[in-house]
Image 1 (cartoon, rainbow, N blue to C red):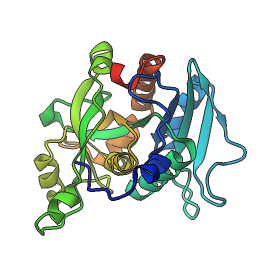
Image 2: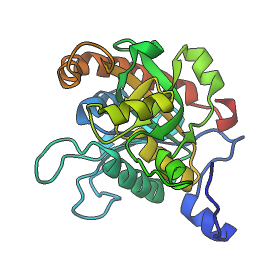
Image 3: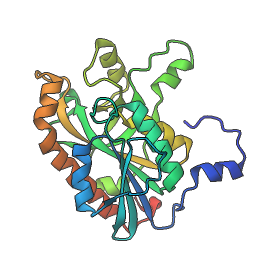
Image 4: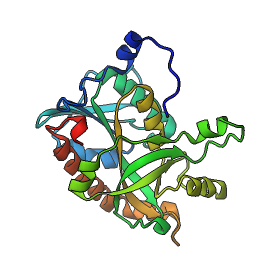
Length: 267
């Protein structure tokens, strides 16, 4: 579902600048993750170090950890803390601009957007389940005008990784993204229309930028709360965050180990 692009091939190469073709081993991996709690265990696991001379503009709170893990250069980027309120900069705006800046600065071969998410028991999700998203879309961009409505939903396919899914026995489901932790009735209707199993606050924004700049992206989401359950979402999210983060980090580690030494076409 790529939009029409009038740019010259030269301009396109400069913007996207992928370092690996489908037949070359992946050498540069970018992990985008929204919360510090989710990020730090992976920083430790992959023995990454914080970038002392940031590749990002001066004054932004974005944080990059980087290092060599096996045969790959790994950068893990999280949007940092809000400069006014000191909380994790979650949501689609931070996710989009951090993804854009990271691609421009680092030219990754592949992006992993990892994070926690709400899950729907009606679609078979349980607490601590880990899903690979098959496709991503928005559920809170309602533009009831022909064609603009499709733009608002912004449906995009995640990079197809059948070998990774089969090898690691990950569950597969559709991901729906919005900027609210809770779910209004309108959001619920849109999520059902998206046929989503999990919902988050970043995935579709990452996908929008990744597709624009032609970088393959995959989405690994671990379930912290059951959206169609009987517990308040915020309460259940906070209750399960630490335990589910451990499941998420294990899944990301397994995925990175599988990716190491392989080309995009082998995933």
